[in-house]
Image 1: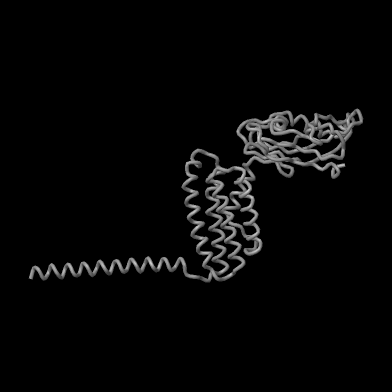
Image 2 (image 1 turned 45 degrees about the vertical axis):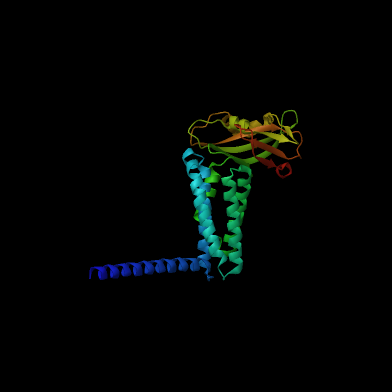
Amino acid sequence: MRKLIISITALLSATMLLTACHSQSSASDSAARSSSVDCNQSTYELQQKYVALTDAAMKPVTLVNQQSKSANNQLSDSLNTATQSIDQLNTELKHNRTHVKLTKALLHYSQTITSLLTTLKNANNSAYSRNFIALNTEAQQIAKKYFNGEQPDSLKNVLSYQAENNTYASGNTLNTKNFQLEFSKIQIVSDDNNGKVILFTYTFKNKSNADLTPATILQQYGEFQQDGTKLNEGIPATSYQQSETSYATNSNQAETAVAAGQTVTAVVGLALKNDTSTVEYVASNPTNKESIGTISIQLQQNK
């Protein structure tokens, strides 16, 4: 009897083991089929894929923007996680059989994101900048064409952060994490010797925790040029100064330290070589002398 019980127990154990293996095999086969079977996704589901692709990319980008030791330590893991997410989403998109043009656009978008993540892994700063611009442009196009212009919050948050904190000179704005300088008015006037002076009125916002002087910042971050030659200081005619009382106020403010968190209006005057050639403010990082952009002013529009 004891031998019979042992035999039955052994038989039951073997049967349970085989059943478990078969169950696991079925579950594994089912998972494999679910990842490879064609599917029909709605526009809403594809929009969720678009958001998920963007969210995956923006997580490491956010860490890069923070430029802190803690963020840098997290970057490698974040890139690996993002890459896995992109690969999974890419696989799901390849098996979709609806909305062919949108699906194709999202597959191309995933490739653009992969290129961006690769430049981050390789610490290629110049390529990263180009690839981020390409990603943003493509994301905007997809949103406009397929989703009524609705962009993922993660991208909007990154763009907002960059606009506020990144260092650049573009349009009529010079921006860094510590200040923002924006040219608001441009005039060409005469000096006392019948020469031409260009006046740049600008707003200066101090975003740092220390006092900053507008004129000093302008000199530190770049120089004004015309036809490739640096422009020197210019002073408008006495008659202009007497009739335009705001000039003295703004000129004085340019040389006065601005307290943290404050915004003022200042002015800078430059002696023009001619009143036709474009004037450029060529900006560079004062720490490493790398270019951060150029602000160009067409004089013909300001005569």
